[in-house]
Image 1 (tube, rainbow, N blue to C red):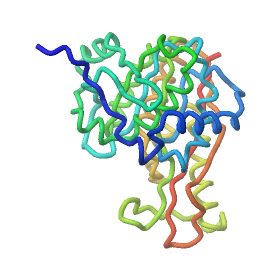
Image 2 (image 1 turned 180 degrees about the horizontal axis):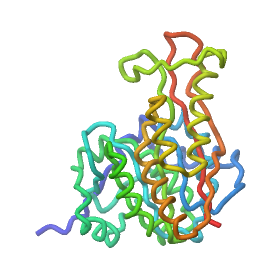
Image 3 (image 1 turned 180 degrees about the vertical axis):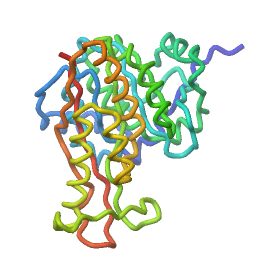
Image 4 (image 1 turned 30 degrees about the horizontal axis):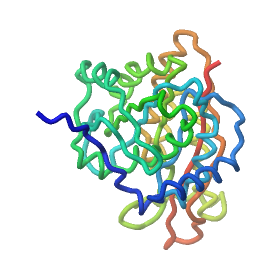
Amino acid sequence: MSNRVVCREASHAGSWYSSSGSQLNAQLDSWLSQAQSTIGPARAIIAPHAGYTYCGACAAHAYKQVDPSVTRRVFILGPSHHVPLSRCALSLAEVYKTPLYDLRIDQKVYADLWKTGMFERMSLQTDEDEHSIEMHLPYTAKAMESHKDEFSIVPVLVGALSETKEQEYGALFSKYLADPSNLFIISSDFCHWGECQRFRYTYYDESQGEIYRSIENLDKMGMGIIEQLDPMSFTNYLKKYHNTICGRHPIGVLLNAVAELRKNGLEMNFSFLNYAQSSECRNWQDSSVSYAAGALIVH
């Protein structure tokens, strides 16, 4: 029997971000140097997963709040873009490659999660096709580089969960969120706006002026609700406006995990630190994707 380590390749390197370790390192350094460490250490962050030319600068504001000296495990919850999934899935890989250095999956936590019966396994093909987790790997490697041999990752692909399932996964992950040595990365872009086949979402509130202002107002309404840390309010917001926040289920899981811990008297607050759009939509032919970066602090 072979003892070969199963690796997930950095399949989006060379297209969504640089495949050159030195070039990637310099870009990440540059973006992080322009962000302020204002509210850390973060217990969880929300950050985008688009190509780095679009969202690298925005994501830096979340990663700047990470403290590598206390973090020993990094949970990365990303939405499934390509395969239908009604639950959450774990990887078959043991190592995730990045152009900076390889990241090791925490097999003990994986075994504990698997034992719950709440998870399925995604194929290596599904894993490598998906970008929502991968786009956080170089930033994780960069943020943790001073302690690179002292931490592991726990990648989780999140399906289209019902409200009940968001509560169940929230309750499950809450015990991990309570541990100061764990960091949760919630992978999400915000509004995907446009008449194009990919988005088919054209909400527009004329009172806001230009289309891009309407998008910003809609996103910031959702961001304000996330900052309240109330899962039901966020669910109601999505039902009312149908904002195309692709990481809504990972966000829902985080909000439910927080709600569980707050019941036990743990005090936390969430703050968004940056907001950006891929372009400014001014007419109906335009399209854009929004990005937001924020951090959860436990008091």
